[in-house]
Image (cartoon, rainbow, N blue to C red):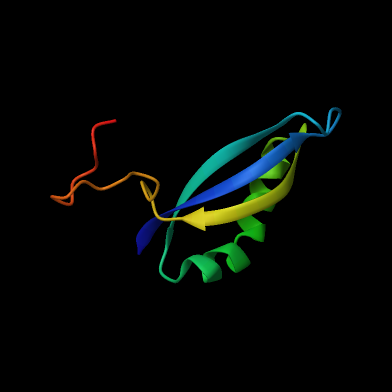
Length: 78
């Protein structure tokens, strides 16, 4: 199993224009597309624990996938 970052965009129930991203990390052994398709139960659990928010979209990413690698394969410093 590999850690996957499930990034959920949530908006406030009483103010739908107020949105933010929540990062939920869980172990997943499959593709990112399979992760996104399997995500609704995890999202439903989070929304159940945070009733002032509603999920509007989500995606899965490998942790640190937005880090840019330098020529030596290590993340760049800045």
